[in-house]
Structure formats: C-alpha cells, structure tokens
Image (cartoon, rainbow, N blue to C red; front, side, top):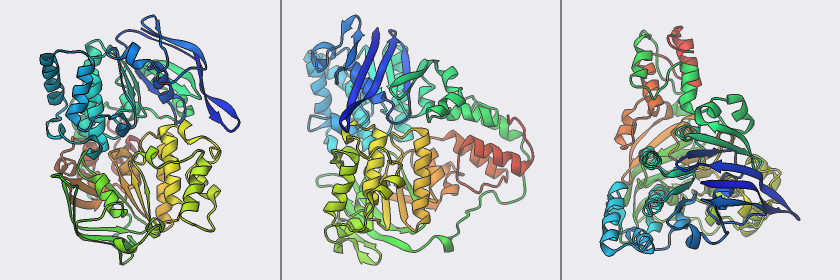
Length: 560
C-alpha cells in the first residue's frame, strides 16, 4: 500500500545539511499496524511528515497505492484517504470551537447535511466530547486537545492513519480509550503507522521498525523486536514493561489472575512495608506557599480552588491528575503567569505579585508542556543566549547550562530541526538560565526516549540536591515514581491529597480517587507491601519490585 523507496531528507546544520533520514526503504501493506520506535532525533517524526507529503525529499520517492506522493499536495491527493495526528496538540486547530472543528472536516468530505449530522453525533459520543464540544480548543488541556485531534482524524474514515506520539499528553484513562480505538480501526482494516516513545504501545502493533540515525536498524514482528534488549539498548530504548515484568517477575501482568497467583504464595512478613527515607524534618525550607487561592478563566465554569500548598527546597513534588483537572493551570499560577482571583501565593515570604518584570523568572523557572511556543532560535545557543540577554543576567556560562541538560554538541543546531524531545531539553535549559529557586516542569518526560528519561530523572534529582524546589507535572506514572518525593493529586481544580510518593504508589485508592484506572504495577506493589515487604523507594519498575521481593521475603516463588 505504501512504498518508501530509498528516501533521504536533510536539515540545515551550520554551513551544511545533515540527514534526518538516510537511504530509507520500507514497505507497508494494506491493513498493517506498524509501530515506529527510535531515540530522540532518529527521524521518526520526519518519516511521518514525509509519508503525508508535509515535507519534500532530497532523493527517493514515496508511493501510496501506486501514486507518487507530492509534497504540499495533501489536500488534493490524500485528504479522505490518510489522516494525521501530530505530536503537538495545539498546532492543529483552525476553528473557534471543538464542534466547528469536527464539522469543518465533515463539510470538506462533501457529505450531505444528514450524513454530516449523523457522523458528527457518532464522533462526539465515541470520544465523550459532549461537555467540551462548544469550548475553544485553546482553552483545553493538552490531553483534551489530542483527543479532539484524533476525533477529527477519525471523522474522515481514513484508509491510513498516521500517528506521531499521539498519547503523550493523555492521562491513563484517555490513553487507553485512544489506543483501544486505534486497535479497533486496525481490526476493521485501517492501515496504522504509529510513532511512539512507549515500548508497551509498540507491543500492541503487528510489526515494529526501529529507527536510529535516520536508518532502520531493526524490523520485524513486535514481540521479537521488543524482546531483544541488547539491540534496543544500543538505540537508547528499553523493553516494554509488560515484557520486563515477564523477565523479572516471571508472569505477564496482562494475563487474568496473574498478580493473584504470584502473591498467593508469599507469606506475611512482620516489619514495615514502606519507609520514607526523607522524613518531614529533612524536607527543607519552604520556598512557595499558596493559601486559599482561587482562579477561573473568563466565561468558563472550571475553577481552581486550593486551600493550602507548600513546595520545599531539596524535594521533588509530583502533580498528577486526569486530563482537564487543572494541572497546567495550577502550574501557571505558581509560576506567576496567571494571577489568582482570590487568596495569595508567597515566594520566599513575598507575594508573588510583588516580583516585577524578570525578577520572577530569577526565582521561578518553568519548562513548558509545548515548547515550540517559547523557543525563538534560530540555533540552540542563540535561544539560550537570547534568554540570558533579555533577562540581563550576568556571570552565566551557557555551556554549563547546556551541559546540565545534555545538549553539548547541539549548540549550533537549528531549533526547528530538533526532535520533540530535544526541544524539551532546550526549553529546560532556558528555565535554568537564571538559576531559580523553584523549577516547574510541565510534562517534562514527553517525547523523550527511555534513556533520555533516565537522564532527565538524574538532572531533576541533582537540581533538588543542589537546594532547588522542583514541581513536576505529568501523566507518566512510572516516570513520577522514579523522580518524586511526594505526590499531589488534583481533580476538578482541587487538591485531593498530598502524600509521600511511596505511599501513593503503594495504594491504588489514590488512583481511584482521581478517576484514573488501575495501574497494574501499583496493584502489585500494594499487594507486596501488604505482605510486609519493605519498599525504600517509590519505584514501580519490575526489576526493583523483584529485587525487594527476593531480598525481603527470601522466597522467589514464580520469580524468574
């Protein structure tokens, strides 16, 4: 169905062009589900843009059903046949409301009035968009935006669905809805090409292609490719958690009753099950304190109401909640980008509103959920230097900041040529420029390959060790488990709980209170701590859980 013949695509770098894709060949059959994995900068997003004709080729050709794909002719050649959901949710909207966005797509298909109405109602119901159908897209959360984007793509009933990391900003509930719908489309005959950074998502596909350096370095059926840990590690990738669980714990957590079976043979042990290695006296000085704050967008019914919130030096606080719960809005309030309509926020004892101009950025650094809106370039070094110059900062060593964010060697790269994960690192560098006391990171792990996520965890922990207060906003629970000291749970604009990270990941009732579905490895961890197995970290990594089970109980049971 899709034939990719020896294509090469180059981007500018210094005074020459470097290949984003090099002599790549790939054949995708009708009805195939192909997942595309690879480290940051490997060419995954470039491949999606090339298949959809969004960018031109330096050499080679791509054919769809025998027709050569012409750059810039998507509407003329491919509309109604292919649909694309890109990785940045906010850049795909044209209309002032969700319903008009979907209706415009249906109008462009040439359907009758009755046909448009019937399909519109079906799409709205299937994606549960009733409550936000009249909202402006820009007022939605990143996760809500992406669901609307997918709904628009589905509305054309495409033969081919191209997905560029579509689940990045989705909470667990919406992610499962989206992935389930993709599975249904594939079973109904839709050809799916799915770029993802999540190995477990790739495992759902029929086949997997691993890109590295713009070339395919592995291709085959998904389980075979994703079981090859040695080769995956060479491309900064890891095996799926599902397979990791099988490797370290000896069972498939997707199998019915698997957790019951492994836990039934473990005797109860008499000693503490969770130990917070940093007690309250060690949490550090309070940097930010918010009391009785409220905020509502003009004309909107959603409201933020926070009774009390404190952020401390040397601690990493995770903020979790479903899509649309107010996570990003709260982050903007704490960063001084929005002003509360009631209550007060104090930073080092002063009202946040008293910090004028750049002074607040010297105290609070924020790394954005969607970095394209704040990157000015043209190069990585230019972007960072412009921040230093605009804030009139002195004694700042840009190379030191780039080193902290693992950007050495990319100083001269054009920002627009970077991958989504690389752009996030540039945005983080900008947030660190003024050496702020409080650092707020909104979905920092988005678009990062597994090894880059590990590097980011080390960066964040080092910032806390250096005396910073860090707030991490996100949906990625395994990432949160590794990086956070405490967890704030937010739902409908209110904080429901504030608990040590280890407690959150040892008790599934916290997920239930947020309306999030059961996370299998949280369930397993809870069962283990109920048996009395001591956990000294909040990790839900299968290797860690297996090590604690062996060390604490002395019983291996089904453990491999």
